Amino acid sequence: MIKAILVFNNHGKPRMSKFYQYFNEDMQQQIIKETFQLVSKRDDNVCNFLEGGSLIGGSDYKLIYRHYATLYFVFCVDSSESELGILDLIQVFVETLDKCFENVCELDLIFHVDKVHYILNELVMGGMVLETNMTEILTRIEDQNKLEKQEAGLAAAPARAVSAVKNMNIPQQIKDMKLPDLPQAIKDLKF
Image 1 (spheres, rainbow, N blue to C red):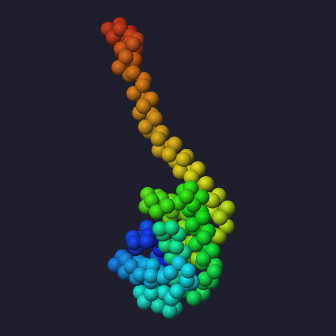
Image 2 (cartoon, rainbow, N blue to C red):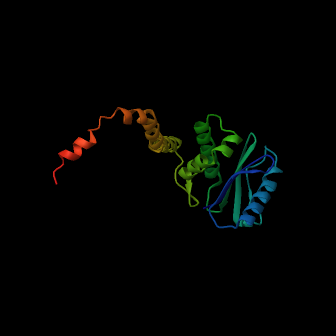
């Protein structure tokens, strides 16, 4: 089972974190810091697996990571997960981000955090891997984007209605209205 997914830059600033086991906020920050210290001091030519830090679960857990440009993608998993399977999952996650953001960079993770979490939720939910087929994931993301565009159209409807009313020139229309002569209309009423 996946215990946490962390993405941080070369300086240890977290850019995304998702914990599938409860930790209070202070503990989460300590886990991110400890994980960064463990991962960042390793050379790029060494194995991408290591024992989890003392805070994340020690030797019962593994940290599986990939370092891309300025970002570390780290999955904290228990012993039941396959290291190579998780490395493949990281690759699918990064390639999906790359297709969605057209050359994903650190700023995309910062400014589109909701979309990044949506993509991650298509891959992993509750610590369990849901989908690894990138085509299927991209189809779901396109469906979500269509829904967002439709909702944006509905959300804009009140603004369009106000704009239409403003363009109607109501004061002039009131002046142009033909009203019956009131004294004659009162006489025509039969009591």
